[in-house]
Image 1: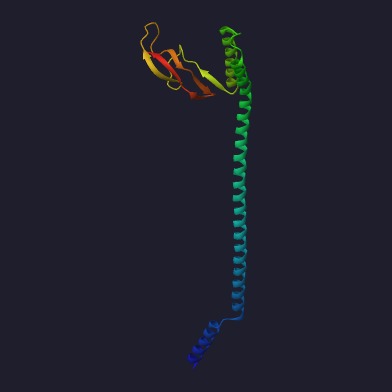
Image 2: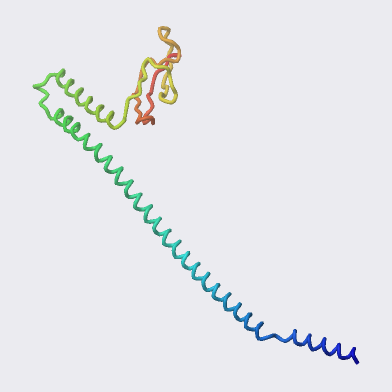
Length: 184
């Protein structure tokens, strides 16, 4: 009978293990509650991060718009200053054109126009615009545009002999290439 009793004891122990205990139910319920709280906390954190992201994106967009406006204003003010410097030159041209040509000689008119030209060159130089030297210089395709080639035995080869149109640069950038005549 001992064998039968041993089997019954084993079956009872097995049945006890199979029954969920109160401790197990409580610990599972607590675990579920903790996980739900963790999910709620993480969801809130995600929502907060989304909100911060949207606010940061909006702030950056506003920053870009402000900077664009500032750059446009700076350019407009710079142009305004440049045009204000040109106004006296326009006034000089108008006075020259409105002067009585019968009284003045050609020589004085030429001198007046030369003074106006010098003022204009000075204003451009002040803004960083300079003439590109060409005649007598070696041909440089980064500064000059050859419009004609001639053969002159008095000058070395590849030297600019004449300038058809003056070239200008703004600081280091070429605004207009010098159109030149180059010796073969």
